[in-house]
Image (cartoon, rainbow, N blue to C red; front, side, top):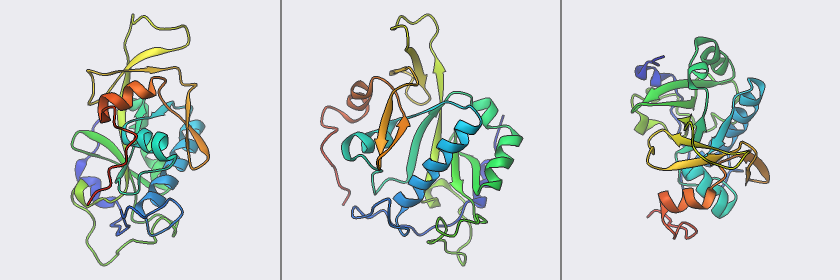
Length: 212
């Protein structure tokens, strides 16, 4: 199912901060919006019996700092049932909860929509500015990567090998039992965490690289 990429203009135009000093507790920070977007998705997916895992940069921040990297623009999660997630029923329900599902650069993404009733998430909204017309103008969003099971792969009894969209050369072990801590709350993630982080961020992944 295709999502109209032009519908990105339903996203709120936010001026939240990506400062290295930002935290998930400060409403003016993009990390605050990302954290609360993740909390919503975790509850929403549980309600719909949808499985997901924390991956990429979000996993890096959780392992390294047990929080969300303050200068990141997105939460990275792997999803199993992409087809169901993209149905009109689910998209409409997401919108009713204040989130807009759109597609940009070949990937489904989720943003806070401009009519969200949660004023805390819209604390940095600039209503005088025209809505975003590209992903580069959206300051906080969730990337939804498809996760596909690799059949006939030999693993332990409770794990399976999966391929994650955009990184098919790297295989992730997933039991859906492993969890990672972000701000003292746990979220599902892959099982081969260290292998994943070394592959994407090298063996130096525990060393902070603060943007200039």
